[in-house]
Length: 226
Image (cartoon, rainbow, N blue to C red):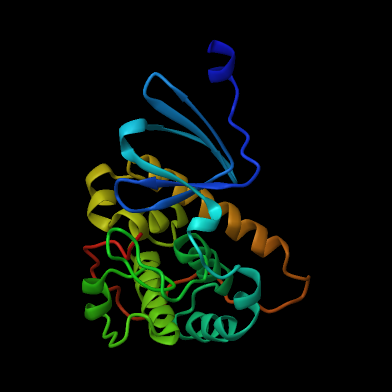
């Protein structure tokens, strides 16, 4: 038993940890010891209480489109349009969409966050969204919200991502990335994916820098979703 607990489970395919909050964490290995999971995922490791995990699902249970194809097709056009409109890096938007919904425009989390950028209905309504599942509206509103957060946190990417996941009130409460396992994993996961996307851009290509738009930031009080 000690030997089994000392090594990571090595599933033949990746799996999703379904958290009590409704978020799905993409996990490539894990071990359970004394009521705590130590999980391995792209970009690092994390620990969480076993009671916070409600299910472990094979990757194919969470059906969605692969990220590469849509990112270069129709959604890519929408991402770049929103990036230009709100002066946010298109690769950051794509990295958030990949983490939030894996480019599934019909995705719904257990917290009722919806669409590509997993907007909560109240956040979508505040941003003027009529059809939360419409990719154009969802990406536009999600990028608008992301831009507001970048303004609020003076382009601090870690705090911006933490607020997108857990809400600005939680970031304000702790004055840093909140000590929630899923939020810390989310921040690392998006930053890792974002760095890889940026590194893959050919030299000389034009990209939009990660800067907020010039308008005054909207005071955000709730997470976008997931």
